[in-house]
Image 1 (spheres, rainbow, N blue to C red):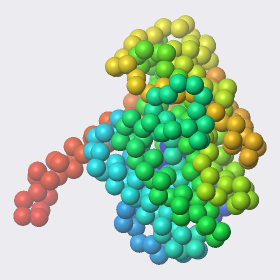
Image 2: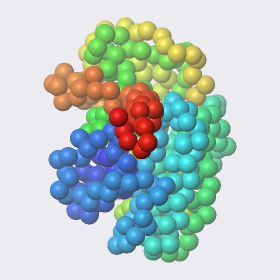
Image 3: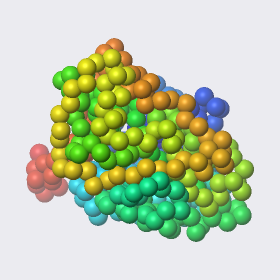
Length: 334
């Protein structure tokens, strides 16, 4: 699993271990090792980068979940070229190496954000309309990964709805999680203008289980296929979502607007994965939001951890990198 210490990966790693799988986690560990410290003795951890890791580590691997990426739309715009190098070229490299080393299954973690802004209900066959570098990189990776599929190499793309819920590498820059944090801190939910935009959602445990479904499915069901991952019931307009989160936390509905009007709006059909793999999410938005709120109240999540806002943490790392470069004289770090 690339990105195995991340927001989704740290949850998925535990699910795979519980099911008896041997897990190798390849991760740059930009966010540290806290998310996997309690399972460190049960996984094979490789600190490396999808762009240049030594291919020999793939020997003995049966399947790859390719999750490593500069995550979310704002982060992708910090350095668009780096985003394309990692989220597009890096993933294509992993897929090609997987096929070369005889790995049976490769699953690409993609996103419903490739649909951008569209009216009506979107299926896997709908036209793509990526509006950000992050979304474009996912689209480009899919175009080169799926053609690799053949009788001996199964390649699948999972376009995930916006993920939410408790994780060991927590993120509060995701819609539902951010709303819960706003309630916890200020008694108000921040809502991105204008609130009418549609977005599909899925809990982090549920999306992890979708990957397991693909792993355990007969190859002819998933090979060369794209699946939207989520549930029709969790297509929600943002303003209505804010009301639902308030009810879930048993707090009055107070809100404040932020940002420019969101250009992303889409409703997605998830019937294909339901009909093909009998996949149905088990966690509702209401339950997932309450779990995050309870974790904050109980101290299991730190609302002030700077690593929980991805783009801010990347900016911090870039600043440290520049500082080290600026203070280097004749090859010596001052």
